[in-house]
Length: 407
Image (cartoon, rainbow, N blue to C red; front, side):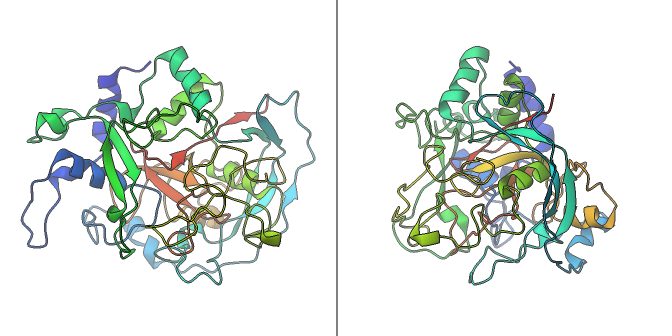
């Protein structure tokens, strides 16, 4: 098991300390409690649309010329080409709980969804242009990693997740010692309708929240062993994958698998959200973020495998919880692949992260959307759309699944 101080030291080099750069509208630095600081520090890095982030400068003087060109590049979407699935069979016995994905060539990316008035806070330009990608075959977990599976890992290794490690005083100078407590971000519905321009209105930093206590210290995973594990930071997911003899999927592998061999579908099951009136995924119903009517059967996270699988036998690749991928996030990744600047054959993503909304904050790809996705606010449960998350952050709607290379 990695030493706590060593793991935290690595985070120090990567994560800007937001508590030092919060300012109010008059430009005067303000003092805030550690919980509020952690809320902003973590929540602003969730894989949900970001708007009016008070801690993010409108531009960065340290941005490189190529980074400044990202928002200036005109993107011309192209049609989806027919997916060509490789004919290679599984090379040996398929590991338990996994499915063989034969690989092939497919059109990767997403057009802006039609008929959706909101569709997120901006057009999905980071998921364009639609471009051809080729990948080799691999195995992938048929479900998201569950509480039971993660518990087996923790028992075997005595691993401690990021959310269970208290913040260090040197990272938050001036914070009262009693506020330096471990915790994580939890979705907390407001008691009245609120504008959708500030997602801090429905997220709260909850001391004691972690994978064992998803909603806070009084909650438990007992009886919920088959729910996907949440409150896992990127390094937590990587640690589990290594222990299991697996790895996290690349973004291209994840999308190819989620499409199930189909071409250009909007959803893993087709192009109609509710075919024959049937609920196909765990997303939000009702007025977001105040009331989830749970017409799909679950007001929050659902046990894995409760909705129909895609053509490859994969469950919950749309909705339920976001899933970590191995790739760094950049909004221009697909432009570089289409132009030939980076490989479109077994792509592993850019060499470093860059998000113009938060320059200097390292983010990895997250895919699939969650139970909080709704056409009113975030439609990134649609195939081909991209999410992003700060590497040392987790919350109660982010999990993962693993892949394994062909032997």
